[in-house]
Image (cartoon, rainbow, N blue to C red; front, top):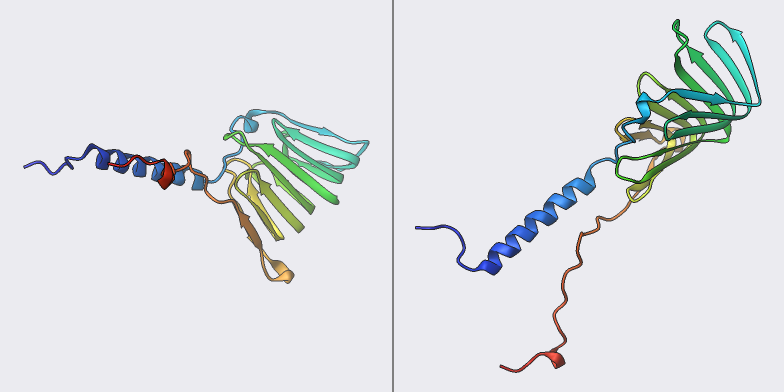
Length: 190
């Protein structure tokens, strides 16, 4: 005895439901940052710099940090390098400091805060003070302290003294709008 439905329309509806479910699950995943950014060199531009002690360089005036599609800006920055002269961390401040990055899904991330702390080795950007992260098509996140993962696109946050974080998540969009039945006046009579 066969357990398969004998009506092909039931099979089509079941397949469509499975495809819709799969699309919803994919859309619910975090937006991954552009995977090639990590292999790119880190470029630092500013109006002035001063190496104050070994491994620490202070940058002032239109500071721009670039690594692939990741671009962070601020009025002032402090770059920390390791023994091998590789950049380990950059702290940017501004009114506000900003960061943006292309995502693997074709979207973009934009972030701003009073202070941005880019931890290169940990693939994270810590945003402190009036922090906002917007992932196009995904949502908007605000709080006193947010942490954005530059590799995975994951976000975590705290409300701090203000007490709460705020998220505005975009609704799931279906791949294909549902077909509407024809108006009663245009239907044929049996």
